[in-house]
Amino acid sequence: MNINMTFFGQMISFALLIWFTMKFIWPPMNRAIEERQKKIAEGLAAAERSQHDLAQAQQSVDAAMREARAKANEVIEQAHQRANQIIEQAKTDAMVEATRQKALADAEIVAAQNRAREDLRRQVSSLAVSGAEKLLRREIDANAHKALLDELAAQL
Image (cartoon, rainbow, N blue to C red):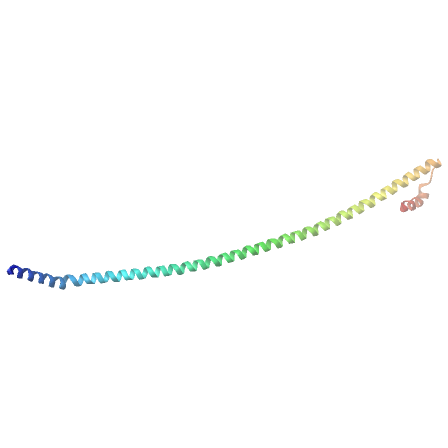
């Protein structure tokens, strides 16, 4: 290999290129790389914080949902209990009303029976008087024998 001036010129040029690169190109490129690494690290940290915050928010939402379900179940249970109370009260009121209606109907039936008996007694006494008149073929004073007929009716 023949070392000549061209080789020395190339070595000097290469040394100048290295010096120029190390002085003017390498520091800004190094800063850009470091800034990029820092931004990537910050982005990764932010992503990790976001995932952590999301996990906490999900736990919070789950807890709120469980609490809401528990409250909803409690409200539903109270509604069922109140409905059962209302039904029982309605049944009790209906039984009281039915008893009252039955008592009124029984009283009306007794009054109707008494009226029917009284009418029957009057008819029987009229028939008795009329039969007695026909048997005796004479007129019987109704006023005179009314007490007798009332006593007979009371016995019937």
